Amino acid sequence: MIPIHIDSTWKGTSDCRSCGIRDMVLFADLDEQDFAEIHTPIDDLAFSSGSVLYTEGQQAVGLFTLRKGMVKLVRSTADGRERIVRVLRVGDVIGLEALATARYDSEAIALMDVSVCRIPLGVLHHLSSQSPRLHKQLMQKWQHALKDADDWLADLNFGSARQRVAGLALKMRDADKPQFTSLFAREDMGAMLDLKLETVSREISALVREGALKPCDKQGRRYEISDESMLSEV
Amino acid sequence: MIPIHIDSTWKGTSDCRSCGIRDMVLFADLDEQDFAEIHTPIDDLAFSSGSVLYTEGQQAVGLFTLRKGMVKLVRSTADGRERIVRVLRVGDVIGLEALATARYDSEAIALMDVSVCRIPLGVLHHLSSQSPRLHKQLMQKWQHALKDADDWLADLNFGSARQRVAGLALKMRDADKPQFTSLFAREDMGAMLDLKLETVSREISALVREGALKPCDKQGRRYEISDESMLSEV
DNA sequence: CGAGCGCTTGACCGGCGTCAACACCCGTGG
DNA sequence: CCACGGGTGTTGACGCCGGTCAAGCGCTCG
Image (tube, rainbow over all chains, first blue to last red; front, top):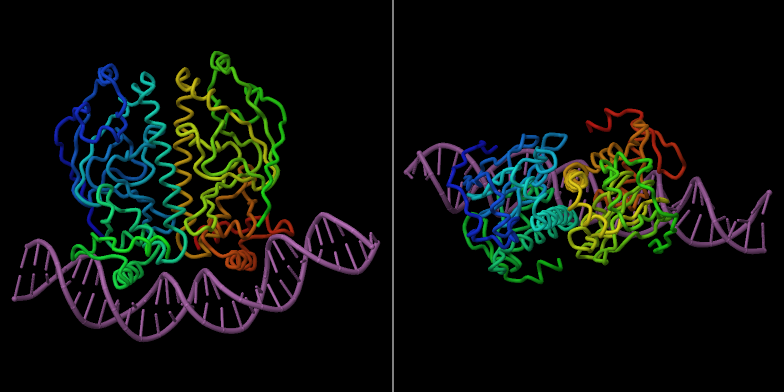
């Protein structure tokens, strides 16, 4: 197993008004009056690949907005194996459930070097009662999280190994460069798709051999989608 | 395939103040002042087994609270098969996502005769800005729905056929009589667990043969759990 | 340059899917 | 009241996909 690092680095406090991805995030619609209601600083944090943002059941101080990188949400199953329920990408909120229970329902681990901003629970509780704009954004984020969860179940955990791997490759396409896609360590992919790592490896090799994917690096992380239709029909 | 009935019966309007399951539902914490803000009647509806509450993508007029019975949430997958993402039970909210988008993200079908009350979107939009008590309940419901979705993925769609069937039997235990559990048509169970109906049937038969379950009816719907530990370890 | 980790590939086997026959329940109609 | 038929659950035989075990390779980093 990979050793657990909990090394986060404080990178300063955020000025949300000038956030580069503000149109994607919780504070998208806030106005000056709303910002004036934020009395606690919002920290900008960095986590290195493999480090744990929080663990299952841990007391929560805030939730996170993912600014760079990807994060996996992990549940430990009854028989001790680890199951990845979904992976979050830039703009997603990490740990929404803390708003309701002040605890996290799963474990969040950085899949690469990530940067996040951490919004204290108090800020959100205060603002969501004051600002209908934030209130609406919160609904959107809840709805998106729930739909995402159902998508992972319906799209990626159904059908043959080939279908699952192809589905994951399609889901993980870059937002800006849709001909490229990011995959993960084979063991992680197995935990996402309920397959063994050898099976994942075999299916990827087959997709490359048949011309659906083309590897961009030597670690098996980045691929170019050379035949999209081959992936989507399977 | 089962023919689609859309026969709902109007059973009157609800007086939420005297609701029998009020402590489980959205309106749990409301006070007189809150109730006074409800200007649209809340309808009490009945759906017969197999009928559709709403379809995927349909324009929403409201969301539902399940008062009696069970409802399955169905997604149609890319290749046209139907996938059941979870089943909702008494006290659960059906169609929460409509609050954010005014559309439903999946199809909801009654697994037996059910009764629900339908709360218009307008009532909730109005109340959630007025009442911090409802606001808090809404958060709880969102969090519960998300956790439920993750649970279905992590607990029931992982591991051997035996583990999945045993897990479903445990999850579907009666709230009041925990030694009894409700199962479903074998094809539905297959769509929940990503198994073929023959495999489901075989595993249930095996669990009965080995003494973990005891059938209570002749249709294979109700079982008594005679050895809980046998189900939970597997 | 060597050690170690992760990815790939092969051989084999078992669990689950497939196809098919049969049993049982129940509603329908004679 | 019983005969019939369709729908659903069960069971069996068989084959294939994916799991298991194991060896080998290549990248990366010390």
